[in-house]
Length: 97
Image (cartoon, rainbow, N blue to C red; front, side):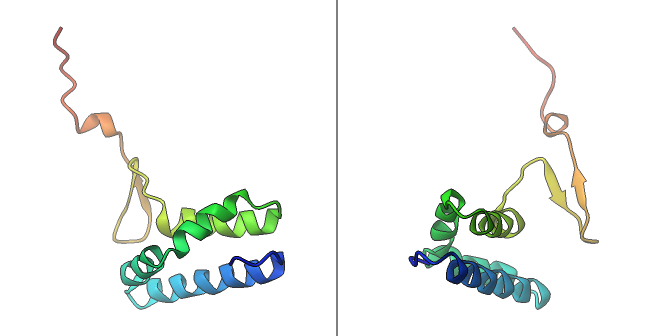
């Protein structure tokens, strides 16, 4: 992904996206995403969010948001849907001055 050709970069991003989709399908997403992260590929994908080509940026963004985003305000349930919760509801809301 150190190439300057946007078409080749997009092809590489599609490859990693397909690897992660396969991991999700066969129950090994965590293993696949860990390998991608530890190998330095995730950092390169994150850097592509600054690429001048909009398609490269969009592909990189989709991978990060889909597979590497750690949103605290939402939790994925067992049926695949997201459950939004109020993070303040879990905290003690009694204020003392």
